[in-house]
Image (cartoon, rainbow, N blue to C red; front, side, top):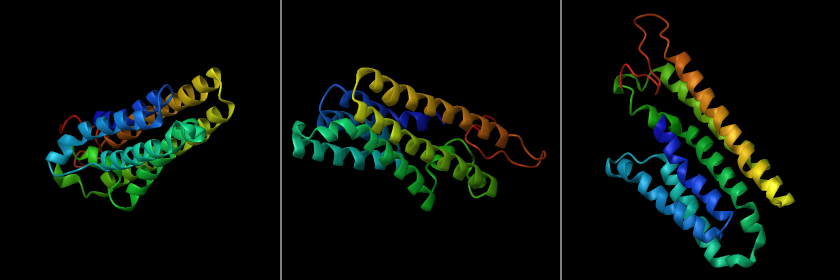
Length: 198
């Protein structure tokens, strides 16, 4: 699942840079990172939903930041909340087609297991969980923008989101570890954490 965490890098960069620089500058750096991270999957003809979503989101952020300028205070105050909401929409929206975690799981799971009910169910569960975690960050970022102090920024823009991400990462490990335990010796392992098929 390490490539999923790599896909979060543009969003982290955006949050960190927008705190000290303009939204447009943060978006351009995040956009460049999203494109760079997406190059391998684009070259292979299998673009990831997270990469495409990041490119679209940060393009819009860059355009909005350049068009509105630094005079629009609400954009810089709530940019992180908007970004978290966008990430949540991308994650949950992927359930309508291919759950975004499934795209990464396929990199380590043999193709013959991709259509198994177990593989599908685990990835739908993980994708839904991550989407809800991203949405849970939105009110925290909003509170940070409303209070607008150094302490509030530290707690609500960083501590709370990091705790949520760590919890989700541990939950991901637990779910995939449980799914990696075959019901019987004939049952194939169908999750991204399966090292025996890596």
